[in-house]
Structure formats: C-alpha cells, structure tokens
Image (cartoon, rainbow over all chains, first blue to last red; front, side, top):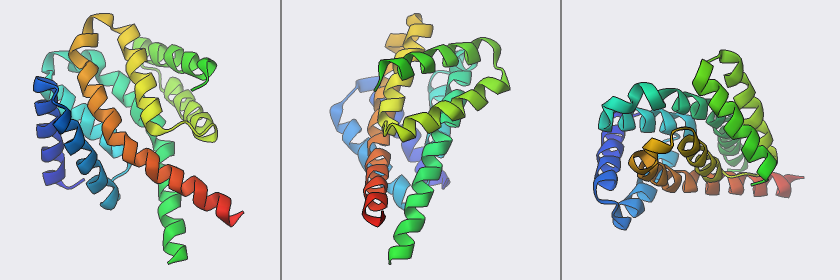
Length: 93
Length: 93
C-alpha cells in the first residue's frame, strides 16, 4: 500500500466523519478506483480503514479493533476472487 | 442478502469479539466463501458488518456509523470489478 494513498484515505475519512458531506463520498469513490488500479486488495483497504478509524477515535481502538480483524478475514476471499479476475483479464489481452 | 446468512454472520462476529478465538476467524472465511457463491457484493458485506457492529455496540452507533458509510462507498467499485469477473467467467463457460 503506497503511503501517499493511505494518507489521502485517512484525511478524506476524517473529513467525512466531521462534516458528513456527500461530496466526500464521491471523492471516496475516486480513491477506490485508484486502489483498484494499483491492485490494492479489499482486505488491505479494510486494514487501512481500521488504522484510520483508530487514529480518529483512539479511545475506541481496543473495543472495535477485533471487529475489523474479523472483517479483514472475510474480505480475503473477495481479494482472491478479484486477483483471479485480474489474471483472467491478462490472459485475454 | 438472505436473512439466515446475515444472522449467522452477526452471531459469529459477536462470538469473535467476546473471545477473540482464532477458530472463529476460520469460520469467518467459510462464511465469506458462502457470500461469494451467493453473489453477495463486498459493499453488502460491509453494510451487514455495520448493522452487526451497531447491534453489538449500540452506544457507538452514532459515532462510528458514518465511517462505515464511507467504507461502503469505497467498496462499491470492488463490487463492480467482481461482477465484471463473474460475467467474464460466464462468457468462458
């Protein structure tokens, strides 16, 4: 995960949590496109999201941390399905 | 999202949060396989996860809810990439 993209994600998430402005959700979709281009897996995104939320709400880290670990496990298979997709696309090119 | 699968997810997540037992993470991976088979999108999983976490920690719902809404937006593109994958597989069959 490139550090710059991670920082951009955290900053955007913090901004959204503060103002709940719809335009930041649109920006989230753009970031997401960039993630997929850079072949960042969905479980890496959840991991980044966990770190970002824990930075924004440090007092909740112990309480909600394990729920994210669970979600990361769940997303691993989605990541595998996507990798399979990217390899199919390469074969067709 | 079939109701039964949703209930199974919530129960498993709650169990993992209580005991942080590695075997529940293994069960999470099995649930995840079932989700993919049933063509449940990653954003639907995040939405289910949000509901489950809010049931487990109702006092945190207002505080952490928006962070999940943001994550759902981010996952929408991953869902689209997967749908494209499933349609490629159908074409090859």
